[in-house]
Image (cartoon, rainbow, N blue to C red; front, side, top):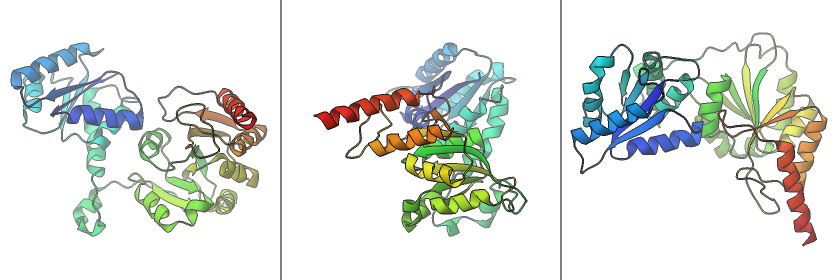
Length: 325
């Protein structure tokens, strides 16, 4: 796997590393190098050499630096000449760039290939509100993912996820990269009635993907439409298992549901860090399982899968103890 070194003035490299880990999951073969106020070029070069030596493969290394011409860049560049056929340096490091680099390592084997690929996402991740401030040239330069709206056929469901946070960073980046949807559909009666939440969700959609908010009954109708969605890859987001159950019972043809996050609230127990259950939640999952669905318990694609049966068993035991106390 291509090694990645993040280099910056101050703690920026460490901060962006932490942010990307929260969104995409923990990564191997990634190191940070920082230039602190009391340090000079030689200090940075020594840190850089140490970071390179700690990578599994010192031949394929991608350097993401904060500023072209700054000290971190200059010290990488001073080492670059002997490795210019393999190494690559990209300046202007931002979070979309780093997440795209992580995702690209899953399918690309060279630093130079990844460097060329991540530039578009780094630029595409820079947006402005109000949108009118963007020049026509900037707007036209953003790549648009082609869709087949109007082609005969139904949706292909690339992911169905239960997540009380709905469309957030982990979904908009890591899951979108993994599943490649053309549409993200939030399926919720509650959110469909909330114009502000609907607008925020639509604005949070990653570049090239359309986001929609529909009530459960509308999703059931869309799932049965065999004329308008051929070629469309749908990522469905549910706030809770009850909405997912209604959709499945209504005819939305799901086979697996990813369980990512269920927030704690009064009356719920929390058997692990990210999932909280009421009795109604547990009953809904039991019905989904009886309907033939399987469950993929992960926050992000890189996480190991949890055992929902075991998690629910613990939740039921805790609920029973609460009732008896």
